[in-house]
Length: 440
Image (cartoon, rainbow, N blue to C red):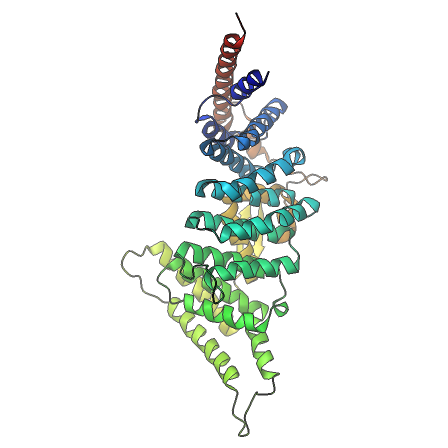
């Protein structure tokens, strides 16, 4: 009985390592359009197979299954599927984070972040925070590769951004901070690759957008501001850009003002001769230093190996920061989402927008059109919505996605044919295996 059950499971999973690669490829095409009810059910069955594969002993199969799940959740909101498989998916991803390879950790972390964005506010979001915070904290202390550490940081930031309370947010920011600025006697490495430093600063900044700056400890502000200022002198451009955005946000939420106010309120503001305290002088000096650094980066000349696009991105960013520091003018941005525009007018909203765009990749627009959590964050209401909040396709979109002759529909049909052929082959293999197992 046990052998027959195992054979049936192997048949359902399709024998071979390429299966979940095929699933991931199929999702990228099929999920562009909901399709027919039959196709919806078939897509759900593919997702269920991928989730079942997370129980596989071979790490390679789990990795490919996670790739398929990431593709699916990035491209389309999976509310109904999450209602059925929420707990299973969360806990299997946490298991992958605890004992998987760097690639598996990367994929599992990204999946949990996508799961949090899918469920939005509510009990499920709280459960993700409560179940994930400790495992993520422990995993960040491991010796994983930079790509895994960066993904763990993204996961922690997204999970807390969606469902964390102020205490959990503060704790998570401290966890991030200690990766690059460990306490004395800590075994955590202080020297980190540029990719990890960028991930830490970007994740920390995302969580800062959710807090009242005056809720943080003044001593923490002093360390944060000094460290971020030092990063503006780093060779890596991505580090400088992340640090610049973080400093702009710190100024916006009043971090430097709070630190200055704390010093001014102390009993040692000035000596008997009326001279300013060393602390207040150092803060004013730090402000001047940051302003000079920003000014230099806004006009920096390109060095060897510098691309024009990267250099322009840095210059434009630091020009915006300089204008903000000198005149208090925040940059205003606008991006098209279908027929509508998503606008930002503060550093807080801009940092949130850029972070979520990077995390969701090509699925960002789709999520903005359908994801109520993201719509609430950015106060965005799509034009093409029915009274129940469902996104309605325009005529052009229907022609592109629904027409039998469209490229999307043809590609989806071809993918379905290939998957059905694989399923038939697996059933044939199962039939042969089952007949071999029957005593003669």
